[in-house]
Image (spheres, rainbow, N blue to C red):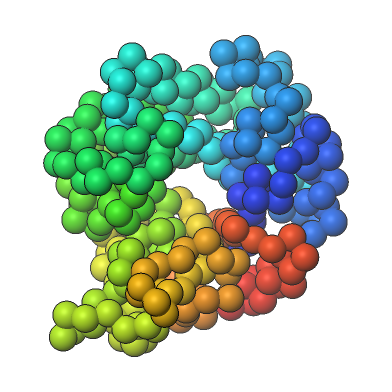
Length: 293
């Protein structure tokens, strides 16, 4: 049986950890989450004021409702175009790493950044020089992970972010051969913006099962035991432009989640599946369907 959890801020904004915990309890008696604290509890203290007592109190409140933290989400821009702001972003990530024992979770996760200051799309992000900038930021984050006995988890995102393809992720994993570096696999995020290419070099509105399977196995072969979580949502290609809309609830788009689950079972991969872009009205039902795949 799969372990289904949630990216907490997809459930909405909450006044307190207890309120969030009660909402999760309505979905299932026990659950686990990816927690980006400021995103889900906007009134929480700024990260500069976090300490072990404060973070432990939040984790304890969640635990009282059967909620465990599977990943600490820290959405920074590690290639921010302003070097001083980039330094501050990395310091914010390091702060989360320093508090992993208080969170009760040793994994702190981020995506890999954009040349747009607000993490929006920029064509300049694909410039290879940004891979080197990302490596510099990641090196500092990994040093902090070693210091605090924690782990850095990164996620590749097609088109939008500096690490935008399996080939670019391969370069990162070969450069940083450390157990402190982990990965999150979001199949929908990593599918190219114009869709998966068939053997004849063109995308279809819905890729063939063989093409999708080839994509999945390529990434899983690359990630191996670095994989610590799967993000679960769905996508379509628009009829007008043939471009990806990748923010749909799981099981409502083109991705073959049942086939994906079979491959995960075949490889004996046991990591959390964290639902994103979920529909609060159907999340409980979708959770049960995914759990049984």
